[in-house]
Length: 457
Length: 99
Image (cartoon, rainbow over all chains, first blue to last red; front, top):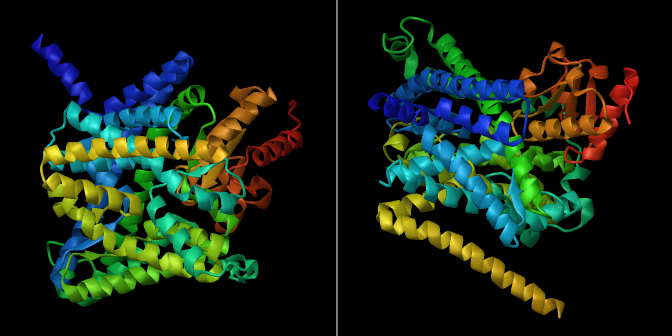
């Protein structure tokens, strides 16, 4: 009997098997053929192992980076990258994260069904990342890795992902010209800020839109993340190696004799390689689970609006994307230099987060505010991206203290940072905070519905 | 025949396009087993990875190594009808009957 118990416990605490089983359940619920069920569950299982393998590659590249940074600046350097930090965290927190994702989906469907927030969040990787963040923060705050963390984490993830699309819907209507889709990404707070500032301080004249500018199309190759990550990491790594000097870098602990510049370039490439592997793993995990989620949601929630991933807004204003990216990158570099001066932990601009969130902030700023709105909005969002990761590091507990990577987007930063602060005040405060968040959303929905009813009369 | 849906990081958007194309093919009444669908990021998209690549139109410039006739640019990535036009064009080119 003990052996059997051990078997069950081992299965449920091995995240790779657990996500495989979740995928299997989803496929069976969709009444798929037996071969499809077997294929899908095995791919999901292997996908998780691909992801943890990618995490290993990232670590081999981030460790020397941290060592060199520590030596040169006598400060800790952290690269905000959702993919990297999630891959690292899933190795340890995979089981609660996967279960939180399921509870969160149920909460999302229920809220969309019964409140005015009709948004079904379908960006799988963001659901997985928020679940992982919730698992790390709640466990670090001492809630354990049992049902309490899974339930509260699920309530938190589901509620957050149902309401954040509402923040930007006003701007989505302007950008896409219809009310049919919503933004299902984890930068919504930053995008809303950018859209709002653009509207307040921008220029409404349609002739001043970013799309009236002529921006060279040759910058398109930067949209290949493998290329842009490698380039940026190479620059950062080479500068670091030059300052650290060949003597330090070529020592036994680091390159062990390999030329220091060659070593720096290889490590930068290794980071990009790890990123590619992690993406492949995430893709394999979600491929079978998300269609099941989508099918269930479609059946249960009439009039729902899908909240989709951030690049859906890029085609509406490609110039604004590039402006947003460059402005955010400059803000990130300047902020990094200030952090070096201040002697805090140093946040190195994370190129992927800056591209997606910065680019989208440009689009939202431009929606009502033209070029001026895009620039002002991107600066504000860029400041959140540059300084916010400092706020979330303490919330990640011992995991955050050791990782050379952290979460990047505004919604992780704001909500994770808040959870961390509440956690510091005790687990009771944290529980009350999460439940209060849910109640506030329910009350807001009821009040807005009532207002609409009165207005209709 | 293999279709690849490509977006910048190959996670959310390309996957949504893939699910749209899946349902378009089902609605078109073709034999689904003849088609293989996959989604990927720009960096993974090589010309032998698929027979046709569905890409958001502003991203075409990031795929210089893929022959133009293999690329189906989508002017709006969220619009299923635009994807449908692309799928039907491919089916017609290859002489596959559909509804």
